[in-house]
Image (cartoon, rainbow, N blue to C red):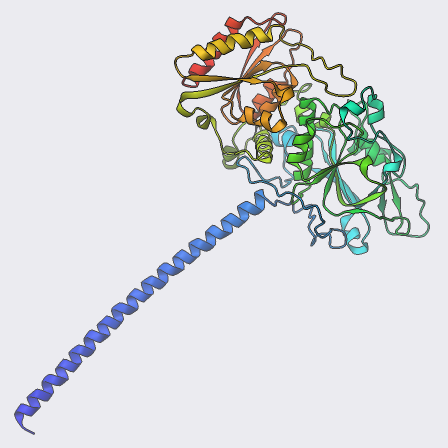
Length: 540
């Protein structure tokens, strides 16, 4: 081969080697890029997984939270927990002030959580759940709070016989039962009004009581309650064998058994609402329960909120015959809540945000009433993230004047409301003129004639208010639903100096002011002067 051909061949080999090195380099660069992309993809995948886990834990905690000590899921009680019935339960809403209700053994007595949250630290399994799972029989237990001196009781496979409960039918129109006495409306229980089933071991008398006096005194003490209907209900429960426990009608979803006393009074009804809410959370119900009123009261305007808060409502006497509940919870009387007990004992608690308490727990602070207020607002479809800054749009402030007016409240009521502010109309008229002449910012005075407003309209007025003013009266209990930074101004007659609304404001962390009168007459100028100071503090 000639030298020329050798040189040409050598050049071609060198060119091939160079091209091969370029290809190898490009391949290495491409491989490096793939590795970088793969690493980036893995990082993004890990972040996505972490975010998904966080969201799952949050939603499962606030929306479907269950206390692992009291598992009421189908897995926990496969023999007695039902499938979904025709009346599905409403889910729990997701609310900003929610904090977990899991019971911890170290809840200090007399702490804010013991008063307003889950201080029911002492439990008694009267009919153990494990035995119920094995045999398919009933279970029953009570959770006692030493701080509140009351219990939340619950059970599975419980039979109610309305024929053994002496009381009026309940749920009637008010105008149809004018003159009916309170004694006719309150329940009296015969033995066997409620039954539970236990494993039969030899002969068993149907009159055997579930619990004795010693248990009742320990877990359901009478205290200062004149007629303790929950104690009497539990006293009426008898234990029967499988052959005697028969049911033609079953309620498959969890229910609350509730007896109301001052059912037409907003303050006392709020204590009942709160007791029902706490009972639902403490027992770890996965959804909002259905209600059964074990009383014979007629309909009231307040039922609108009962129905909004919970899944459904029915009166015990409205069942056509005996009925069995797969899971029943006995809600304590409203008189046994901190809202009522705070009127006679010192509950040293201050309202705080759930965010702050989550980061820095404090036995002297609580967010439970804020959580409950958000629950009410959400039940009516109102936003639960609104704050004061949202209300003062374009320097526009709502001042809500909660009025007292005549209306027929219950069968024994004459339709006349006792005046707590003798010149209420004069004060309102003066405030109207003051609001219309206000120069610094636009002030809208809202005439809060609550007796002639639906409950939803009342809650809307409360949430939209920057300042809530009114004479001492049950209508002010609505401040439990007020948003953060709402200011309360209470006009207090010397004849009605009670701490109801000062305490609610304190426990919610709301700014509170009072004008204490000498008698029941308020000088409009004094009221306006106080309002001017409040408005300046709001930046108006």
